[in-house]
Amino acid sequence: MACMVLGAIVDFAAFPFAAQSLLAPLATTTIVFNIGMANYLSKEQPTLVNVLATCAILVGTIIVVVFGDRCSPVYKTDELVARFEVVPMIMYIVVVIAFLAAGCLYSEKLDKSCDEQEMPVPQRKQVAFVMAAVGGVFGGNTVLCAKTVGEMLKTSASCRCGKGVLNWYTPLFLAALGGNLLMQIKYLNEAIRRFDMLMVIPVYQTFWILSGTFSGLIYFEEYKMFFEEQGPIKEVMFFTGTGMALGGIFLLTREHRQKQVRKAWEAAPEAQSPLSIGTPSPSAGSWLVNLMEGGAHEGDEQPVSGSC
Image (cartoon, rainbow, N blue to C red):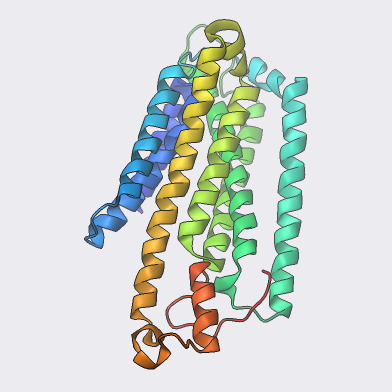
């Protein structure tokens, strides 16, 4: 818990000093650390896929840092507010609101359908996927709000720029920051409650990074840096690095999850019985299918089939 709080404080402190589109992709290193600690605690040797996925994440992150926007101008409060009124930002806000509304409604609909089918809560894969995506987008909004509040604090510390935090816009940004943060935590926790964390976290982290990156590119007009200053080569390299990092997340978590599936199957009574070799029982077969999907957990009874 202390590490989480300290990490959040350090993240907030870093936002005013670098471009948002540069900082957001760095969150991929969290997955590398988590999977690495999981392998260390379980005393497992890293496989070739582990090594390649980790290298892809680290190389992609380095490419983002090298070719990303490293400028951090000082914004006046009026400038920050005016950026919400430009056409690209209005379009982005409309798309995000529509996505969040659709995701929230669809996840509730899927959850009710699962209740009608009496599907156990920890096996609701589709519900968890949608909730993780919604939580990730709320997380990207949190990044944007934190960056904006950080810019106001930086403005206050500057002797040559306007009002800083001493204006009526600050409570609005703080309220937006707190609201998005609470919704982010709510949907992430609900997604983890409904399915395997090794599926939920990569989905959440992917949407978090994409939302945080694109909101920074649009709101702070960081995309102009590619077209006006750095040229198409650095633009391609920046998005290539982001794609490599996200692809590495998928490979790393997929490999770690397959290890857990193999361990669980080896520990299953059906797998150890000579009578079951070549003639698996229907319950054992359905258990394996659900386990390969990440839905079976130790101690669960026979899974209930369904589309949730």
